[in-house]
Image (cartoon, rainbow, N blue to C red; front, side, top):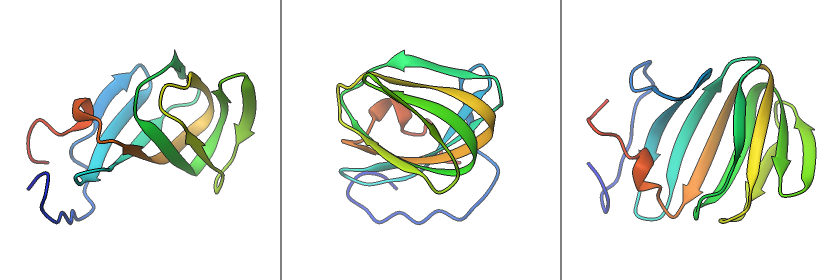
Length: 117
């Protein structure tokens, strides 16, 4: 399965990739224009400030983190969500073990699975 075809993936524990120390990601599904990723982040880890061309929309499932987008910093808790325009500097400090779900558009090719998980 890939671009241009329907994708349904059943829940499983395979396919998590290390992203940074204390942070792992798993691409759940993707289509022609969007990619859905789950991030698992350990308390005390840091997502350094960075930019990328993709728009990023997220939802915090569990945990707590301090999210910085541009010049604004806010503590996010379960149920909070965000949208970050492409090219905008952002980063996060992970205050508790956390899980976030994020959508990227356009598809981040660097997040496409290397093999079927």
